[in-house]
Length: 111
Image 1 (cartoon, helix red, strand yellow):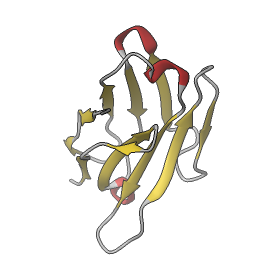
Image 2: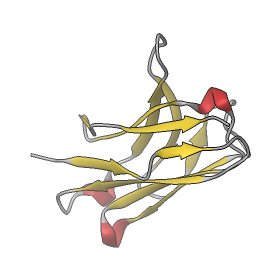
Image 3: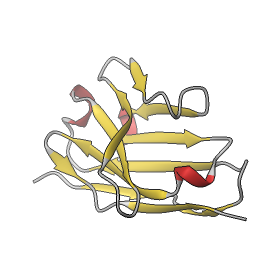
C-alpha cells in the first residue's frame, strides 16, 4: 500500500512563502505523475499543480507565476513552493498519486 504524507503547511502573512512536501512510500513513485490539490472551506477540491514523471508541470491559472512544483525522485518527494501567498490561497492542500491521497496539510494566509 502506498502512503503519501504532506507537510510544511502553516500560518503565513499575505505576500509570504511556504514550501509543502509530499513524501511517498514505495520505490515506484518516480514513474507516476503527482498532483497538488486544495480545498477551502465550503468549496470543492481543486487542482493546483501537476508534475509528470518526466518533470513537466502544469498549474491552475490562479497560481501561475507564484507556485512551483518540483520533485526529487531519489527521495520519493514532491514539493510545492508557494510564493506571494494570498488570503484566497487558504485551504487544506493535498497531494495525489497512483490513486492515493495524502491526509492534507493546512495552509492559512492571514495578517
